[in-house]
Image (cartoon, rainbow, N blue to C red; front, top):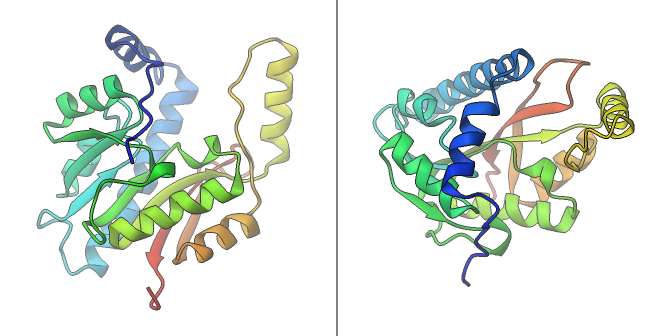
Length: 221
């Protein structure tokens, strides 16, 4: 099935997004915390996988965006395959990382064989998926193409975060619509897709809704 290619970004738009998105202090703190947790989970993967990651294990970065985590994934030793719904984002990620990139839509199926990657790395995707069935389908597709591991983020229901977004709407800041889910819903979705949740860490406990989870394929899979 052909992927649905997003044309929402032009080449110039990607460069502008890259320059501006994590420029503010709050977003720099978010990026630093996401990087720290991701690095910690990648270290766990490498240890549990007997050094396969550091030896050049394949990682699927989806959505790769402009390659925000390319240096982090490369430093872990992994060989990265970038993938994004936006052609221009995927192209920029390839330039940033020096690794291949492909346009793909996880909801419609990924063009990779089963177990092609040691791990799937997916930050900033699931909170944009509002349909629970689509969220489960994405996690199941990650399970299919991963031999063992995944690092994913999601937004957990958080009263303070919801209040902040309501205030932004009142101030006409027009925040993007995101989907907050509770822990049970995330764990159920992960389990139904064949994953065990090894760790589930908050970005900033009580202050931010984002969580980063380390998933391992269930033994039955």
